[in-house]
Length: 553
Ligand code: SF4
Image (cartoon, rainbow, N blue to C red; front, side, top):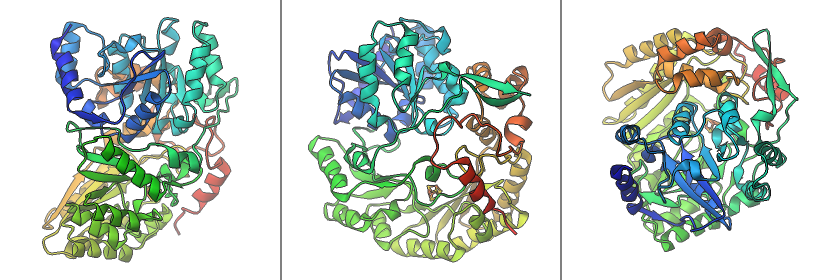
């Protein structure tokens, strides 16, 4: 027993205001985990939404658990206590269902660490009748969950909200039945994928399909269902990045389908939350005692929301400051800029993604340099002091002149305003499943480093400009996991206790896998891919046709 761990949990709970709490004595007990710390997890809207709808199902009691902070980890290891939930401090392993919401590939390592701390067998085949079912959902399961398939009993692929009641009912009806039978019953519910029912086949060292052949349809919310969902913060705390911000998801999907980005390809269509529903959420949060001081609008493209001007005006009339998750340079109405500045925001992120118009066209991020400058100019005029630019290197068809064009774009943006600060974030492009670039080879880390250095050098003496480069090695691991197959499970097992670049390379060697094959190789569009069995909005043929449009003269 560690009082320090219990006190930490009690302190966190005491600092929360909440619209929803687990009921006492439910017959289906769910432990909902986020594979990162409390600080990181409590800013994840997905976790809060799932927590809300699970606790609103009659008879379901859902509690949260997180990766312990470093000092807590040491305490867990020292006292030998099993990982427990925040609300009742009951061991995670005693729940009926242990669910995770997964948004970032690097969190796979934390996921394994948390299973271990909970005292659960890591591999699903080693867990028995007395163990909870381990379920994973979230943004990553829309893409390619195969690297962690060995550790998961059930994946929820698509949007869980519409189907979780069916899962709960199935668990009730199959209670006490052999685990395999229970899993087969769950696999019959649309949107649930039980990976142990399918054995991957490899031919000549490459993934070649499943035995039996798998075809799992993803489920999505209809526009009406999405409109009615409580997709906003339900628990607020000071102990997170967006403290005192009521996050409100105002749309899902993206109409732009930029070729490098999964958002436009992951959902069959864009769904907007109607203005009245958004406002109901604000009033519900206020009436329920949520302690918020601003509203954060979450959407792939907030500027496109059909009612954005009215929403900003209504927030302004009610003296509620507002901030936005992401904005496009060509969709930046003045009303948004005014609302941001009045709400105290002085910094704006506008991602050009690359420096040249020509390459931007090739990746289907279609706005001109002049549109970019116009957005920046209007932002400065409205009172924005700092512009954060984000760009990738290593994009398909990229040339040295694109890198020089990026330098020019940054310099000219900075020159628009005398006292402005421009921060450029640079990252290495990672090809992602479901996009037209899913077959593309990833640029190597040496090329990425050279290009990043070229930008850094060219901007080193430009006043008011800062450059932050992400580690190409971190991107490389992300790239490995993003398009990997089930063999990466063995690699994760080697690495999760002591992650680091060398560990990854040693583990790949030990498992007879190579970066050349899995990351750097240009894949043929006729090859089976590890995510092909999970339904997609765009067929491979349509992606191939779109890819052909990306070729530059
Ligand atoms: S990069 Fe932005 S605008 Fe383009 S598809 Fe993704 S979310 Fe939409």
